[in-house]
Amino acid sequence: MKRKKLVAGNWKMNMTYDESVSLIEELKQISTNDVDVKIAPSFTNLNNAVSLLSLSEIEVIAQDVYLEERGAFTGEISIEMLKSVGVNSVIIGHSERRKYFNENDFILSKKAKTAIDNSVNIIFCVGEELSEREKGNHFKLIKNQIICGLFSLDTEQIKNVVVAYEPVWAIGTGKTAENYQIQEMHEYIRKLFDDKYGSDISRQIRILYGGSVKPNNAEEIFSLKDVDGGLIGGASLNFSDFNAIVRAANG
Ligand code: 13P
Image (cartoon, rainbow, N blue to C red; front, side):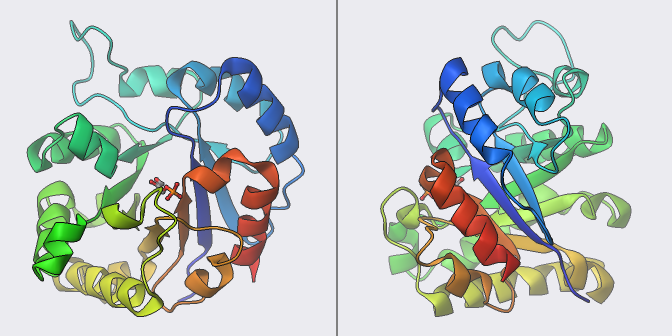
């Protein structure tokens, strides 16, 4: 089964309102062709991004969401709020959320479940710190993140999940994982889905790579057997880089 490639730009805490408008105007030129293209602006830019891209194939998604559905949680954003501005997908478990905001497996599994229960698709991120890789713990750690975060979802629900493998040591460092490291981890992740949900699901599930994907390495990374696209940080803030990466995904 051929999986459709997906390229998602995670803008992180970048782009003022005006800057986001300028970038989105440029992004309208992108030819998505056979690739799903998504961007994740900050919460303050979501509403406008959705309207600016209403005639485009590019989907606007959120970088995070709160785990409760509503209530007295000052400063948080709910699933319903996202949906009310036309956002139907969200990134969950980014390593920066895990690291700086202490989001643990329990919190992340609750977020994943709340999103999926409310028909919002997720890109669920996993990844190891360099110290864990050096100790040889990386497979065990990723397995744990996936089992705890996602495996309470049932077979129908899991179809709305995309996984992003982002080794923490390759994020924003300019240091990409070696191709064999990427492929072996993606294959390992797919096997976890195979063991839990069977081969139909494991063949369908998309696994993105993230961590210093740039125009000069995207094509090679996207050609790896179990890589179904990328989650792009820095290079998604610049039209020509992001466009080149989408083109690379189109092959
Ligand atoms: P960079 O592409 O800047 O390394 O960031 C990757 C990332 O964290 C995407 O979510």
